[in-house]
Length: 114
Ligand code: AMP
Ligand code: ZN
Image (tube, rainbow, N blue to C red; front, side):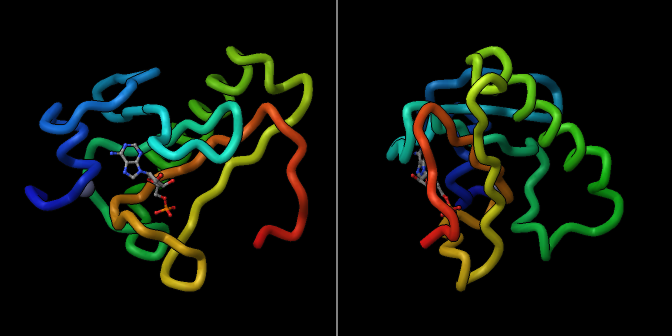
């Protein structure tokens, strides 16, 4: 997807502060952090959203979640808690239509979200 912002980050056409990479996943710091830790985790294979995921995405979705857990632990967030967010569609505020989990932590968060 030439026009997709996150595909261009995967392709190194756009710089990002990468914190983890393997053959299937990329994690990098959000450009507009909403918490002291704000990392985006994406699959390298493009699909738009959770609603755009077919059942064959089960493995990569699980890998993304468990990598969010690992990155949280590496930063000590397992001691204080953290939030993993998956915005899906217009009402959620999803802006980039390449699926991504947000890992947010390092401050107290409120509920319900805005
Ligand atoms: P969402 O609203 O769930 O689609 O989240 C998109 C996120 O991508 C936002 O938190 C943005 O700050 C973030 N973002 C947009 N452009 C970039 C970029 N070039 N590098 C890192 N994060 C970005
Ligand atoms: Zn993409």
